[in-house]
Amino acid sequence: MDVLVVAGEASGDQHAADVVAALKRLRPDLRFFGMGGPKLEAQGVELVHGAHEISVMGIVEVIPKVPRIWQVLGDLERAAKARRPAVALLVDVPDFNLRLAKRLKALGVPIAYYVAPMAWAWRESRTKTIAARVDRLLCILPFEEQFFRERGVAATYVGNPVVEQLPPQASAASFRRELGLALEGPVLAVLPGSRRSEISRLGATLAAAAARVVAERPGTRVVVPVAPGLPRDFVAAAFLAAGVNPVLIDGRAPQVVGASDVALVASGTATLEAGLMGRPLVAVYRVNGLSYAIGKLLVRIPFFCLVNLLAGKKVVPELLQGDMTVERIVAELTPLWAGPARDECLAGLALLRDKLGPAGAADRVARAVLELVAGA
Image (tube, rainbow, N blue to C red; front, side):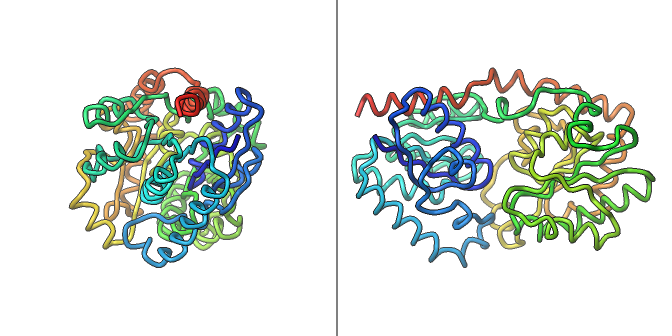
């Protein structure tokens, strides 16, 4: 029995791979095909396309990729027509996956959608599209289930996959040993993002801020995780240009945060991962100016960092767009090394896990997927 799996971005690839592993435990006879990254490929999913082919962040930035995106969409539709999957698991990337869902619906394929679109933040009208095209919406933020159910969507909160993907909390010394770092001295973790475009936009500013921290706190080591698929020299370039010789670690971003005293994190899933590791952080982000101007008119949320959104208040500093300057970053980082601001931040972060509930999201998603097969 075939299952179509479609994921984009590094986090979606990981989430989808965890579900595929759970499905294989429950139903060893299943075969998988679709789109994803190295994590899905490692699970034996036959990739029609790679997730990197549609990876883009921002409203304006997507325009040059539109022809390729439409080609990938058509190829996946043709693969579904040929193989007639028993069910489709679509993970995140709503602008792509909701279009694919329409085509799959026409083929009679039941659809489970994992990682709900942020219709609660903008484009609430999209809930009508989701209700029409998705059989089960599987949410990873606790407040989403009620929001979507009130708008006619068959939504279920399954827990947050990040909870089970992280290593157990431990001391900074423990993570430093694991990563081969010296135990003594201050460590600043810098997570510049998982896409080339992010690092191109953010890298120089983050590197200059790191250089300022090193100048003000001699002996500080700057540790940078390198996301899968990114060349190490590309990630290091901005830091070296700023006079910082970073310690590069392949992947293992949560462990890098765990080894740190303070973290500087490009917004996204990484901020939630960093928050759950229990280290003070500053969240930052910057997009194309036109994308930001358009988004500012449409988005209606008080915070952009997931840690603050879940808490319903400011737990960690966040600097967006024009506020993301070297001076502001250093000013927000400085009080987090020690003292009341650090203690207050850590107290807020300690409540995160309770808000997300227990581990086991992948198993719950797998069972929901199989329920759709049984009901088809």
